[in-house]
Every structure is written in C-alpha cells, then in structure tokens.
Image 1 (cartoon, rainbow, N blue to C red):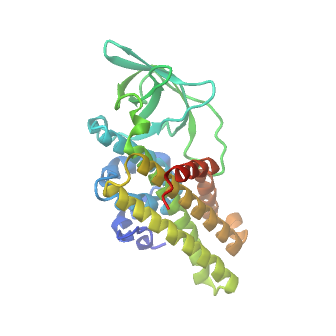
Image 2: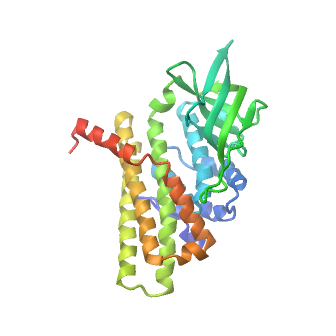
Image 3: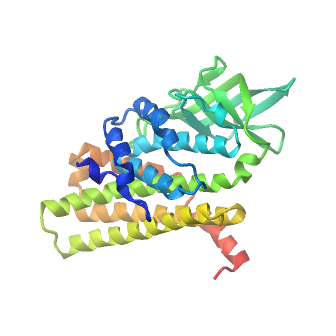
Length: 344
C-alpha cells in the first residue's frame, strides 16, 4: 500500500503529518523489540497531551495502529510514560534510548509494596499484566505505600531484583506483545509524584483517550481493507450499505476525538470534566470499532479472515485490544455522572 495512505488525519490535522512515521513503522513489521527501538528514537517527536497539539498526538497513535496494532500497542505505554514523567516534572528519568512501560494493574493474591529507608525506596512483590516487561528498559509501576494508598515509582527493569513471570501467553491477537507478571525483590525505585497522584492527575483521563485513539486507528485499518474490496470489484447495494455504515461510525468517532483534543488543550478537560470526557470518548470509539468489525465481517465474508494472514492478525489484535475497555461498567459510571450533573 502507498505510504501516503498510511497517515490518519484528525480534525484540522492532516494525515500527511505522520506519513513518515507510518512509512518507518511499515519496515518494523510485528517485531516488538524493533517497535520499541523506533519508539525510543521517535517518541519525543509526538506532542504531549494538553500542550496545544493534542490532536497531533491522537493522529500519531491512530496512524501507528492503522499501520499495525501490535506496533501501536508497544508505542502507546511508552508515550504514556513520557507524558506522565512530564506531568510530574520529572522528565530527566527518561534517558535517551530508554523504553518504558506503565504497570498499574492489580490482581488477586498479589501486590507490590514500597518500603522507604533513609530516603531510599525499594519495591517488593508481584505485579500482574506487565506488557513487554522482558523487552523494556524501564517502567512506571504502582505500589502500595500503606494499607490505603498507592504511589507511582520509576524502576529499571534490568535490575537483578526483577524476575519475569512464566505465565502462558496464547492469544490469537497481539501474540508478540507478551504480558506476564513481574516479581520484584528489593528493587530500587524513584517516586513519581506523591501517593495517590497517579490516579488523581488530569493526564490519567487523557491517557485513556489516547488508548481510544489507538482503537480508532485499528478500525481505520479494517475499513481500508473494505475499500480495497470496493476498488477490486463493483459493490452491490448491500456492500455499499456496509461500507457506508462503517464510514459514518468512524466519522463520528473522529469528530469526538478531535473535540476531546480541543477541550484538553483549552483547559476544559481537567478534573471531573476530564474523567467524564474519557468515559464518553472511550465508549464511543469502542462501539465504533466493534461496529466496523461487524460491518467488515458481513461485507467481506470469511475469505479475508481465512486467507489473509495480515488481515486476520489485524482483526484478532483489535478484538483483544478492545477488551481493555470496561464496557458496561464504564457506561454505568457515565450514567451515574449524567444523573448527578444533569448536563442536558
């Protein structure tokens, strides 16, 4: 495919702004180590959220995922970590060439605790769902500082106290983006922000919208395959119907992502307003991606899924990535907010 088709525009941002990134990403393939090297080299070119060019950031994430979702899945946490460090005014932690993950999941019967002695922090315990932990150089990780509060800490994953998990990883989607537990035994750590800051900060909601931009780009990749079919042979009216539905869904999602970027840059997505905006955008884009997948299934039938490895991977990647959404629980949270605020 022509690399000029790779860039994904958003609002006033044209897709051509990220054509070079898309072209370079095409050479990476599905190698997560190569993707992380590219992220280390080019991640600082992607604007930070809230700095006046948030739409550029969403467009970059969408461009990466339209090219390959596994590539975007490697980049997104790295970019999120850089944004978190900038928000905490601790950018110096991210040295040139370093690659970062964000490990904030909790699981049953496991936890990471933080212990301070003489002004130095060390982490102990097991953290689940650490994507690419064996390939990254560093991570931001949440750890319990007492019975009720978690802090955020920066750690070097190459420290001798870091032990990777051995859980089986058998998904059909995102096969190369391996997630395992990580066990920490007295690993030196540097605090990022005060306890509780990670969840309270405005950027937490903005990062969630960034993930939605990745979902959006993944769905763009699906509709591009539908367009290829339309170019190969004339569509009947039902084929046109499916393509039209997918176009409308993506157009609405693109408009909402562009609006979210404008609101963030204008200072109208802080605090509760940002949290509500993230719920709205994430759910809308999630529903859009699922709608595009459905329309593509109905329009093209089983052949692309059964005979085209790249397309089958794309669909499996997107379906698995979408499961990060809390779905009905997030919509219920949004409904509670609407009932309390009565915004309409």
